[in-house]
Length: 269
Ligand SMILES: Nc1nc2c(ncn2[C@@H]2O[C@H](COP(=O)(O)OP(=O)(O)OP(=O)(O)O)[C@@H](O)[C@H]2O)c(=O)[nH]1
Image 1: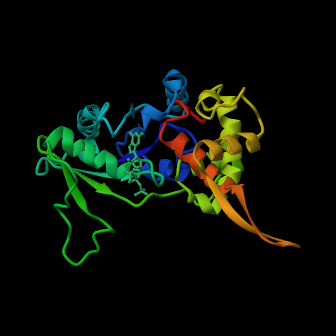
Image 2 (image 1 turned 180 degrees about the vertical axis):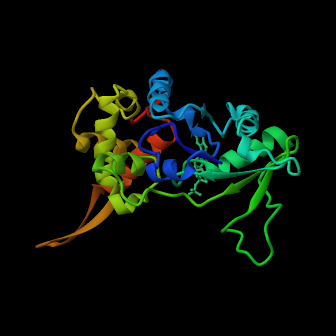
Image 3 (image 1 turned 120 degrees about the horizontal axis):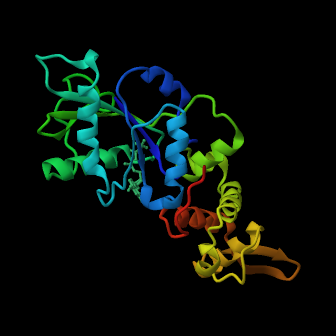
């Protein structure tokens, strides 16, 4: 069994209840989107996870297949080392992929298929007739050893520890933007970028210097990206069309830039 969270949030993305449910089952932690996270933080993160009893960790980039090759041998080794899973009659592996929404679970399956089967988009091979595909569908990802993955819908811990954890998950797309509010998320993102000393936004948006105030940042984003809207204003002498900056659209753009790595590599935890 296996689970994964994003490299942006290697700690906040983990679900304590899953940790418990996994128990002694062999599992590895895949930290995907490593291309978006700060590589200098990797050793500290690994050490922290090790202290929590999580020592099988692989950082991956599923868009460029980075480190994807490491997964199958590690899974085979862990299962091989677990006496409970030694069943001579069966040599296939069925692995569950668990992770918060948007972390790249489907992308991992596709990447594994590209690497091991030289095939692109995943096709379901073991769907039981009559059972909704979305519920449980096994997808072959490797021939030797014969390995299947079962994709699961993204799961979130029913109780998020604190507000900041929720914000980090939202920034990574695990919680729908509108539920939190793009403006509040943009504000938190600016705080997080400054805290991580990641100042690429200053140059990208043509700001004079780093700042703690979201308003001038969004103003620059809106101007740079042409995020304006015409608003009709009623005056005593008739209606006037005024061009206003569209701050919500600018906030959305700011979040998109971050998620695409255009604001630099950041590890939020
Ligand atoms: N930069 C980067 N983006 C990635 C990587 N892996 C996946 N993505 C992107 O992340 C987004 C979500 O990927 P999915 O594979 O759909 O994620 P998921 O976990 O299956 O999502 P849910 O089904 O909602 O739980 C997509 O836009 C992917 O292109 C990666 O390693 N690096």
